[in-house]
Image 1 (cartoon, helix red, strand yellow):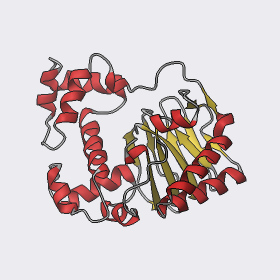
Image 2 (cartoon, rainbow, N blue to C red):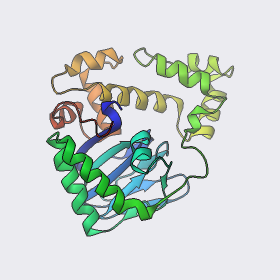
Image 3 (cartoon, rainbow, N blue to C red):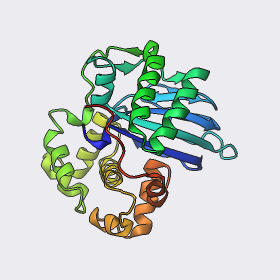
Length: 263
């Protein structure tokens, strides 16, 4: 597997809402301070300090700030579907319980974060297995394959076009033409199908693509221009909007390439 099978991030003092977005990975977060709010399609999930919250892949959600005076700090580990399937003995899973409070699970999560930061692949593999053992009672077999509504037949050509042109400036008019709708009808149908506006989706994909290319010594200004952001300020603002920290802070958290945890 590639190095993006597992990733991590630490956010201290979240002070702005995360807009609607999704990840192609499982997101397992330990709330270190404050209360995290996850706004899902049909309900809200509140996770207080010392609890673990989980979102499944392709699950569109937002993270509104609950209390500006009690900013949220959290650590998140992102695990790819392929790695999660491997850890689950070849089974496709999803989490039925999204908010978990268990001291032992927290301890393993914290140890795993430390080993990931130190790029200790052997210990990380061991601890990730332990974490999944603890989380196993909270999983179930999904009713259908874990795929995104963005990959529906209607949107296939459009999404492919967007993903192949993330380094260009994309306009709603040109995207609408691909679906043979005017921009207003297109925007309405896109949001109805996906829960996101077309341009929010484009911005999110640009940010996530740029994040995947950040290394410990990369030039962030060059990266900003590569994905057609106006300047480094625009890139930093957009990055923090979806990731929770600036690209510079994210780069500072990296300790080289993340380990491949299984063969």
